[in-house]
Length: 318
Image 1 (spheres, rainbow, N blue to C red):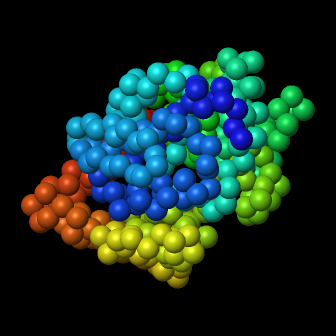
Image 2: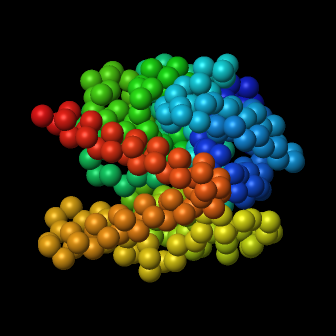
């Protein structure tokens, strides 16, 4: 069982949005099954929707629809009184039992050393992490480690996370620009380390990050392995039509072309086509979920924000 002190000093914060309300039921059902000694206080961040789940104490933190991701997170964190939070996104579907003894260990480290900002609980096999005997099973992510700020499962010092936020940022900007912004901080970032990032048995929080494994949400859609896993766990009341489902072959193609850093001419054309396809799918999805008028407005707003981020990033490079 997890240390009672951690339960008293920690909350689970799940970052989401109204669009993904169909994801909440399976997420929380898996929390109930595979993390029986989870924190008592659970906070779900979203815009306007409310949600309850039998057997769980969930508080919905609503914010204005035009708020940035960081503003919504800040709004939630400033309403919480617990010293620590465990951060999660709504599509981190547990695949096995959470290792509560690992959480207890992290909690005591952070209590003993206030300089620790976070214990990242997602697996990492980054060879550039600094190994240390002081924190068994964990390495220190130094200032030159990419994405030292990220949105994976992690035990955070709540105040430290608040101080790292820029309220204008999306989650991707928080990870990319935020990592650069806090490069010279003297805070300690502990990352769970393993040589094998595939084996579930090695994970504190057993879930899949890599889209190629087929779990979670990618490009706003369900990945192909979710349904099978949900059914195995008796989770049958899930609406897959609203978001749609991506098959394995489609994911592999998107990764091949969308993330190609040095494409030849043909790949550039295919990359552009895929971007158009992804945007068109998002428009159709918004219309399907929110109706024609609101869906089109939401799509135009998302496009404008994407362009703003793109050109802001480009101008900041020079």
